[in-house]
Amino acid sequence: MNLFKDAGHLLRFAALFVIAFLVFWAIRGFVVPRSFGQYGHYRGAAIGEIGARPLHFAGHDACETCHSDVVDVKKAGKHAHVNCEACHGPQAKHAADPGNVTPVKLETAALCVRCHAASAARPKTFPQVNAADHSNGVACETCHQPHSPGMDTPAANAGGAK
Amino acid sequence: MGGVEGFMYPNEIELHWSVLIVLYPFITGLVAGAFILASLERVFRVDAVKPTYRLALLTALSFLLVAPLPLQLHLGHPERSPEMYFTPHSTSAMAMFGYVYLWYLMAVLVFEIWLDYRRDIVLLAERSKGIVRIVYRAMTLGSTNISPRALHIDERVGWIVTLIGIPSAFMLHGYVGFIFGSIKANPWWSSPLMPVVFIFSAMVSGIACVMVLYMATAKLRGRNIDMRCVDTIAMYLFYTFIIDFSLEMLDLIHRVYEADESFRSLNFMVHTKLYFSHIVVQILCGTLVPLVLLAITQVVKLGEVVRKRIYAVAGLLTLMGIFAMRWNVVIGGQLFSKSYLGYTTYKVGLVSREGMLVALALSLLPLLILWVLIKLLPPWPAENVPAEAGD
Image 1 (cartoon, each protein chain N blue to C red):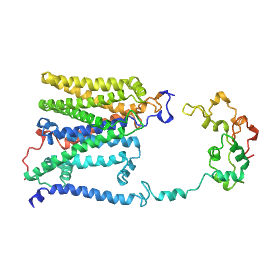
Image 2 (cartoon, chains in turn green, orange):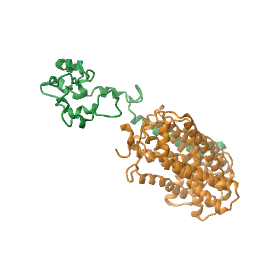
Image 3 (cartoon, each protein chain N blue to C red):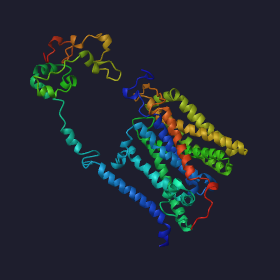
Image 4 (cartoon, rainbow over the protein chains, first blue to last red):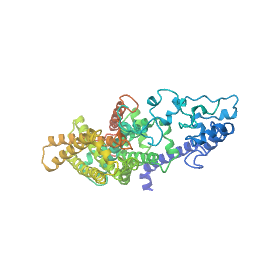
């Protein structure tokens, strides 16, 4: 009993910890979303919320439905594995309403150098140019057909939206 | 591109970890080191260092309170930091630090200081007036029992807390070294020796810091410096420093001998971009000079005044050297490219959120907190409440 009396202050300190822990637990119950940890270290409900967001990309198959001529040109060239929307950007709205939503025509002088500007970080076998020396501001499509950029494909056969 | 030599990948040009991340391991190191010095008296019964026991504890607390601030400023969004506690991520060393920090702050430092000061707090609560009285009364937690038996229990529990505190201090700073040592993508950091080097450098900086603070506070208070105390601290500083330096040299020799694919690049960096901070500041001025000075005091009989001056100079140089070590680890590890073909430059801002002024303010803040703590809980025996325990 005496020991309990003389160690009472330690119990008070311990009680402080217990109170702090209970407060922490109460706040935790309030602020941590219910679905947290359902699948991993994130909010499980986030998957459904992200899934419900509107789509921006139509996908390659949707493009093929109408633009089979471009797909044929593309299949034969170096850009066969480059997805349409990698250059043209997200086109879900265009796919849903092709009559009213028209994709913006691309500025090839700015677009192509995203991948083809000379950089020591790129593999040496990857086609890359110093744009200023190579074309001096002239649009790439003047000489290259963007859907099949090899010089053996005439630029006039560009294909795509006319 | 300004400050870049050779080839850098785009994400390597700007440094992600700034001077604040240099400050963070420096501050936690001081905490761990100061606590380990305090444990010398409590657990290992080194009576000579008793005059610094309470000062060491208060120093550790002051620096520990400031330790998360550089991280908060660096990351931004401090309101998000409680999420680290609410949703603990057991596989992230950085996320688990929150628990290490809280454990060390509350279960070790605050508890030990409270146990050690409880008698004084109760007596000060009886003696003081106004708001100060309310503060002291709150600190008593409503218990005024300072009977010899209650104080004896405090002593025993305090001993156990210190005993638990030693591995906790090692964990606190070993973890900081682990964060760097476990980054396998960076050859400057990736080394299993890193946590061990960090622990010993923490002990060195903490001991040097308390030694300098003790001498400075004695001077400011116009009191005599207990030479037996500082002689003993200097001796421990010297021995710990030798172990720390040996470990760092072991790491260096290992790197030189192993000479892996990163060696040429790192070697070039040490001889160019890091030459001043690594070779001149850290190794020459911050390690060899204080080691030689401390060695002189161990082998030559010197007068009191000379010893005091040597200890002050060696202590300050040691702190500078350990800060340079943190700088070289954190900044040095970001100056070279993973391609090993280029180097970037770190330019510290002056008034930016992670600039020099903020770093300076964060370095001075612990001293301000220490001043408040000293006013509230005087660590000097002579100024403690001399009244008899009111049992």
